Every structure is written in structure tokens, then in C-alpha cells.
Length: 447
Image (tube, rainbow, N blue to C red; front, side, top):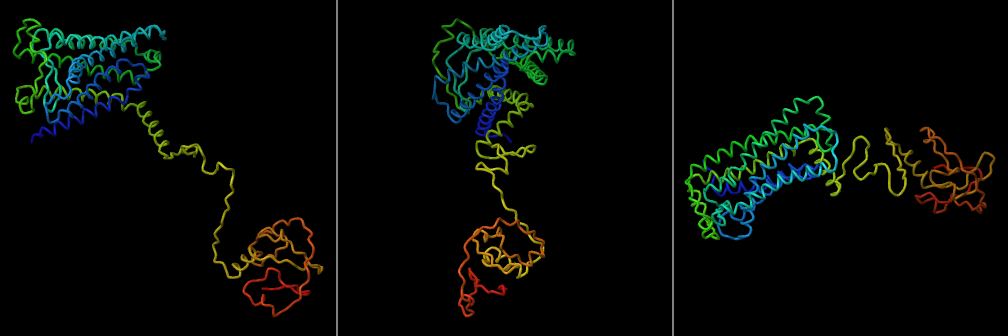
């Protein structure tokens, strides 16, 4: 069962956007390490994937020339990106070769500047030259294919082979030569290879082999695909070259083709699918090499921790017990506060126990007879709950084994006036105990 054409267009658009996002994730780390080859690889393939996504969305179900200037930019960039990815692989292999054959442990600033300039000349200069030479074999401005977007157009002439089609082959051969020499130098100097890698502060042992693996895979695909393209184009009818005037006749025309018409042409649907999926595959391959490494996972954890702090999600460190805000759970920003501790009794409290507790917090006895018959004066300070030296302890407290509180120094207050005892007083009939109980000369009130 074949997939409907609109669904194919949506799938390619979705994967193009996914490829652009994935290949841009390790960009910052390679910029920080001054890895020019990988930065160029991200630039050419990431930008091409983004252009591919935009073209597929804009021309999903039409072939209208909405943006001519945009099509001029994207078609020229497509020519440059197909050469640029090969040059980026060459830059990576060239750098690995120099690291494997370096004789000095340290490099000066002038050496680094010279290497960066040479890498940019290869990775940017050669693709820009190919974009400039596109005009010499370009048949007309561009074509618009429904479901694809803007497509470069050039006739099958010897100039197209000389100025564009065959370029990836020599670049791939030079890159393969560097890769072979790098492997040879590695096996020859594998004992002191760690010292060679340590001479570059931004390069680790694992990253070195990931770069080598990426470059090797690019070589394995570049050379066979270039040979296949040359053979396939040679089987097509040649356009007889009669000069630029004939080649550029009606140069400004734009061919607009519907999906039904251009998909009926032999070989064109397969070529368009292979061209777009190759870009997506290069983006995903780069992410698999550098987006899932150990240093990448460390950056992911740092990014997630930073986002969690910004949105207010606290993360705890098991070793210290501190939260993400740096405060510990038992302290407060306004001073130290002591929280009371409540102990739950294992046995059921009796009615006398509950009544005794209520007395200790709500009732204070002002005049208490000591052993010598002297009345202790009423003291509002000493009658506070839980801290009075004249408060009567209940027998229940003695049974519990509660230690008496150290008495405060006595404070002298004038003795209260004597009151007449009246057994029929309404205060004795009320449910509440009076605040100032009546004085009995020879007895103490028992409740």
C-alpha cells in the first residue's frame, strides 16, 4: 500500500524540521571548542534542512511563484551546500591528521589563527566559488515543483560536469587520503596518543574518534554517490553547448509544475526523494555522533536544572539536603524559631487528669497556707501557666513523674484585703471556679 502524496509531503516537512533542530543542539559546544569543521557541517546541513522545511510548507499544494528572491537564494544555497558538506568533512579529516602528526605539545596563537583561516577557506571558500560558477551553466532562473518548492535548473552540458557535478569526487578523495594517513599515524604513535590529544584542550579521546567516524562515513557515502550521479547523468541526453547567449535564452522564465506532471517524468521523483532524505540523514547522523555523548548529557542536565529553578521546581541534593534555592529545611530567614514538641500518650487519660491540666492552665491559687501558717501573697507574675512557683501540683503529676520547675525568686506584693466568708455566695454555685477564692483560716479548698 503506497503512502498518499500529501502524507509524504508532511512527513518530509516534519523530518526536515526535526533534522534542523537536532543538528543545531551541539552547535554551542563546537563553537566553544573552536571546531571549525563541525560548525561548517552544521551550517551547511542545518540551513539546508531549514530551507527544505520552509519550501515544503509553502508549496505543499501549489506551484505559485510566491517569492522569486527567496527561490534565487535557496537554489544557489543548494548548490553550495552539496559541495560544502564534502568540504566540511575534508576540514575535519585534515584537522585530525594534524593532531595525530603534531610534533609540538603546545600551539601558539598565530598557529591557531592560521589553522582557522585555512579551514574557513576550504569550508566556505570552495562552496562560495561553486555558487558563483553556477551562473555559467544555469539554463534559466529556477523551477517550482508542487510539494517540493524551488529547485535549481541546469541543462546536461559538459560545463555542469566540469563546474559542479564532479567536484565532490576529488574533494572526497583528498579527504579519504587524510583519513587514511590519520589512521596510520594513530597506529604508529598509539602509545603517546593521549599526550597528543591532551595538547588540544578542547579535544578529548572520545570526541576524536567520533570526529573520525563521522568523516569516514561521509567519505564512504560521498565517493559512491558522486560516481552514481555522474553515471546516471551521462545516460541522459546531452544539451549541445552553443555559448552563453544560447544557454541563457529566456533566462528569467520560471517553470511551474504540478505534482501530477513532474511525478510522471521518469527518474525525477526518485531523484527528488533521494536529494531531500540525504539532507535529513546527514542531520540525524551528526546528532547521533555528538548529541548523545557524555558531555552532551551533562549539558542537558545543567539545562534542565536551570529551567527547573526558573519555573520554581525545587530539586534536592541527596548529599547535602539543600534545595535548589540554597536554603535548608530547618532554618528560617527571620531568625531561629523553636517549634514545640507534642508527645502523644499511649494510655487513655482519665477525667481527673484532664481536669488537672485545665486547672494548671486556667486557675491560679492566690493565697496558699504554708507549713507555718503564713499566707503566701497573691502574685500575678508567679501565677502564669506552667511557670508559677506557688502553683499547686496535682497528685496526677506526681504519679507521672513530672519534675518540679525551679522556682523563681519571690516578689513582694501588698497582701490583699480579707474577705468575709459567705457560703451562700453565688460564686460558689457557679460552674466556674472564682478568680480569687475566699480565705479560710484553717483549711484549703479541695475540688
